[in-house]
Image 1 (tube, rainbow, N blue to C red):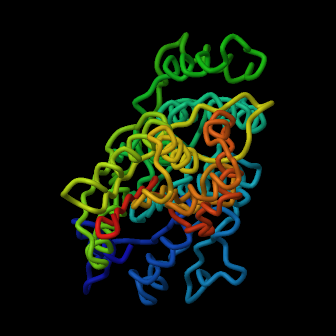
Image 2: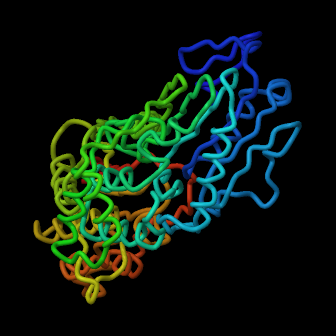
Image 3: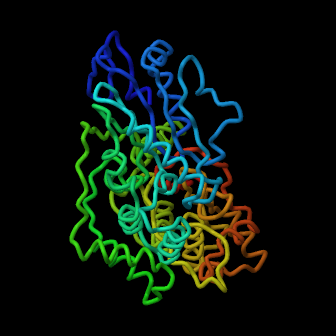
Length: 438
């Protein structure tokens, strides 16, 4: 935040833009995301006590419950930026508390005037933290739709296309409700390629999707079982029948600024790799990846090549793969990073790699410290994990088939458990090899 927001004399610098402070009336801060608490702390430090008091800085930011400190430091010296627990930790779904918080945000922005500045802080997890269902759609049905799409393997673009069409705040809804003269969104991107209309479902970005597109996605994953989302289907069909949504344009001047993303995380990892003496290569995906299993197997094959050929001895990649969930009756526990690493291990098994011959280490983790509905960020794979697998007689293919990577790595000691990091810029994968020990 402080790299992108600072006060210099009579000017407020936000990114490459300079705003004269004197004409600004109030500054209000709203937003949602896993990084909300850290972004608020950084913003307060950037503005400083003088501007916090003079500009009557207030606001409301929806965050996961474990991001709210017991004694909030945000209510100091005239600044009252409230951190609202909008969902329980580890439950990436809309909640009643989230709806309440979204209503407060809409109320705050609607009371601003043309001399005021609104700063919107958006980060990973913002979609689930900003639920404001359209009239006629209950929160329960919106939750059911979210679960349905996620379980069916919908990608983030598909999920957010439906979310936006069923929301009063997503798809530019917050910007349309804002009556400030200026609205500036500071965004930490959790979506590959940083598409502004997809990150947190684009609350300050005009919606380019249509009800017809959302309807097609929902029908695709319903597979004819329309009783699972009757109100959502009826609403989207009505909207489709009258043509694309006729939204009013935002009345304020809007700027959207990405201040962090997966590439920034990989750059930092590369700096650390160099510090540790590795010669590294990096690759940050800029579009949706394929199945986690395919990526894991590819990384395993890369590890074997790196182990025996000249070139970099550290490979750092980033992205966000998908996982097709097994049927509920056989489904275990896990997440896409754990599934990816387990697929890499299964590839080593297929290649007949004994633990004594493996001079590589591979990990994959979610930068938010969460991987699926588990307490792990991801998993790590090295020779010791393979040794334990062989000793226990575990079959990785069976655990893969059942999406039960968590229980596999729980037995072999391969889970990465960092706890929540309170941010999200997709996933980071690292492969290192030891040629000296080969």
